[in-house]
Length: 305
Image 1 (cartoon, rainbow, N blue to C red):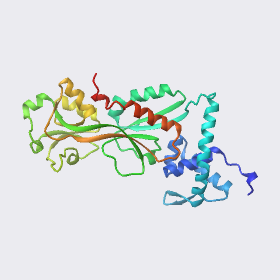
Image 2: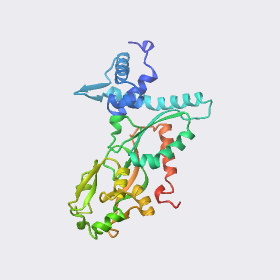
Image 3: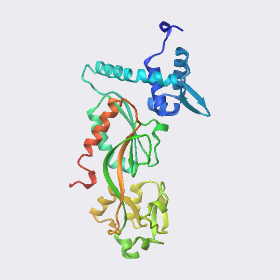
Image 4: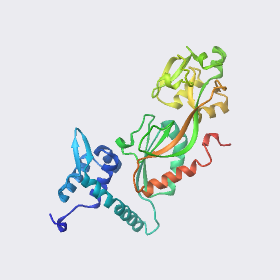
């Protein structure tokens, strides 16, 4: 097939790069806001036009061929330049960022602190569409196609890029009335047998861990949301282990008390993470820079009001 008869287009090439970056058709479809059948057809049409296999398919997985890697290395910088030129032309030369960004974050942190930050970002970039998913479950960026996620806690080893936004910590706490009834624990071992509110996404043996000490707490309720755990703790249902962004405002109001102040808090670094795409899209770079600036003064819940 001669070069003059080739009919592949930029959408096909962009789809190729997205599938290679995310590793699955499902994730690429989510990123591109397309159906899986459309993504698959774009790839198969491109393979037909090029007369070359771009992926090896085995047991539901796809692996890029050497031909795909060679093609991607050549077209990746060219597509980035074309996209930038098209965006500039479409915006009358004002360099406005356009397109869609998919963002994932934990529910309570998202609703309390991230939403106003994203509102300011959206106002500054009206050409962008933001798709935000608040979920306390672990979000796999490769599976969902999300452009960026907020992770709370130590990062697991992965190929993801990361930018630390601020530092938080988890701490045990309880309502004053509950402490009057049950007494104030002086050591982690004193929590043994005490009623606690569990968190659905973490076993109690890990949630209530103090170094090597893991008291055998008595779970009276399990909840999948941090704000609900805080509210139940304020109501005196049981002891709670909360992140600072939920606990510290309650401490200031006197509705919760910090337990075991002599025990070091467990660090909870907060990061933005994203796939290792190169070159990084302008819209994603703008979001990362915006988050970095917003958190440059430290954690919002620790700032003087």
